[in-house]
Amino acid sequence: MSPAELFSLPFMQRALLAALFTGLAAPAVGTYLVQRRLALMGDGIGHVAVTGVAIGLLTGWSPTWTAVVVAVLGAVAIELIRERGHTNGDVALALLFYGGLAGGVLVTGLGNQSAARLQQYLFGSITTISAGDVVVTMVLAAIVIAVCVGLAPQLFAVAQDAEFAMVAGLRVRSYNLLVAVLAAVSVTVAMRTVGLLLVSALMVVPVATSQQLSRSFRTTIGAAMLLGALASVGGLVVAAFASYRAQVAPGPTIVLLSLLGFAVTWPVAAWLRHRSRLQTPYVDEPLGHEVSDDHEVHDHDHGPECGHVAVPHDDHVDYVHDGHRHAAHDEHYDEH
Image (cartoon, rainbow, N blue to C red):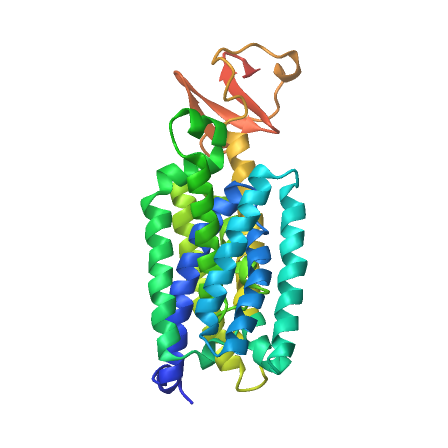
């Protein structure tokens, strides 16, 4: 089957739409979770949503909507426990991990549902998504993106420094609860794409990759959304073509493609940081210079073609050599 024939299939078109919106929404809210050092919160909410899916299978209601309700309640609970209780954030997450997964398996058994049915939600089953589920996914993802981008100044201020945000007049508790609810909605949006057990990766890994190369918050959230969309759509396409030779699931492929992006970006970012440090080794120091006895005798003539990094300095040029700045003055070299 050619690529044109594959992409003309209705189930593939539905899957591509769901992957695109999921890849945009999950990193958007994941950026704030990473800023607040709650990267595993999405994982905890995903475990709670298992109970919601099981309730949907037991009652015959839509598992998507029951998962949304239960995940939102779980996210609000963990935020209140973390804020008001004497329990640390990681302990509250652990309570959600154990309780949510155990409750989901128990309720699934009560409904005489097979584990294979629940597995569609645990590890994703995007190629079986219905037209109605695609519409729900697109609407919920659009709401998450609109809130995350539209309230970016307030949400960033609260995530970066809660005490300063409170002094500035922001309602810190309300914004924290809003981020928790957005995270819960994002988890349920992504559960058909990558699965409830892998959803946290799509919320965190694109953000971590973006932070390697960007220095501003706006660039970070924009690049994270772009990387998330590329990984989701790319992973789906790779899994579709690989399935001609083997049984390849789209959810794990999307996550592994995101991790590959991080692995490729990390050495590039490390090289860029190293180069930046060489160009500005004394950023906060005054621009004066002094003669160094170690460099009075210099066996290397610096110039435009010498191969070392050139840094303009007042009326002359310094050359970065062995971690030092060298500049020719009269018959000797000074170290700046």
